[in-house]
Length: 349
Image 1: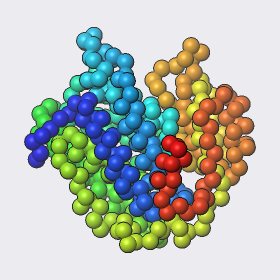
Image 2: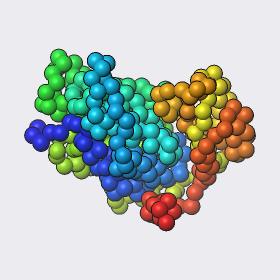
Image 3: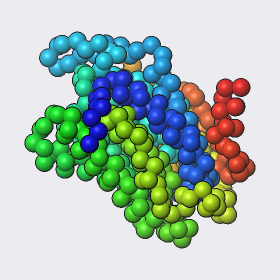
Image 4: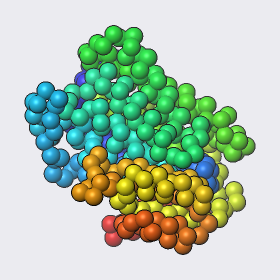
C-alpha cells in the first residue's frame, strides 16, 4: 500500500494531467487496435484530445463555490465534485468520437456524488464510479458489452464490493483498497473484451476504448496514492505490443460520417431527436451538458451519431433547435502514422 495519499481536489487535477500524458504516450497503440464500432483507428487520438480538454480546463480559473446539504460553503478550489464537474463540462463540449464522448459522460456523472466534498473516500469513490458507469451505459441508444462500458462497470462493481466489506470506513487505507480493486477489475474486463465482440475475436485484439479507460483509472490510482503508473498492466494484451501491426489499417474502410454537435432541447425534443437519430444511423450518444435548464426549460445536450450522409441528420437536428459546435468527420480517414501530433498541430497551429 502506498503511504503518500492525497485524496483532494488537487489530486483530481493531477489525475487528469497524468491521464493526458498517458493517453498521449499510448495513442498510437490505442489507434492501432481500434476496430469497433468502426475501424477508423482514432480511439487513442479521440480520448487524448478529450482528456486534454478536461485537464486544461482546470488550469484556468476555479469553478464557482459549491454548497453542501448542511449549508456549509466549500471553497470551489477545494471541492472535489466542483473541480471534476468543470473538467467534465469542458470535456463534453470538446469531446471527440465515441470514446471521448463516453469518457465525458463518465466524468460529468462521477462529479455529482462528490459535490460539496473536500476529500475523496472509499464510499464516495464507489458511488462516483457507479453513477458514472450507469450514465455512460444510458447515454448510448444501443450499448454493447465488450467495450469501455464493460470496463467502467467492472471497476464500479469491484469498488462497491470492497467498500461494502469495509463497512463505511473512510480511512485512506480503505480508499487505497477500493482504487486497487477498481483497476484490477478494469484490467480483467479489458482482457474479457476480446471474447465479447466478434470483430475483436476475429482480429485477436482487446478493445481500444477499454484499454484507454484502464489507463485513465490507473492514472486516478496513481494520482491519489502517490505511486507510479503500473506499466505491467498492459503486458500481454493482445495487439498491444509495439511490434504488433496496426490492425485497423488492414480492415475495410467504413462508409459514412460522424456528426457531433451541442444543442438546447426540451426533454420531449431530446427524446424525439434520439428516436429519429436511432432510425437514421447508429452509434447514437446523447448526454446532457450541465445540470440546469435555461429560462425556457431546455437543457443543453451533446449529440453524436454515425450516418451515411450528414445532410438528413443535420436537417433533423436543426428542425428542433440551433446546434453549435457542429463537426462532420469522415469515418474512413487517411491512415496518419502520428495522428495525435497531427491533431495537436491543427488545433494549436
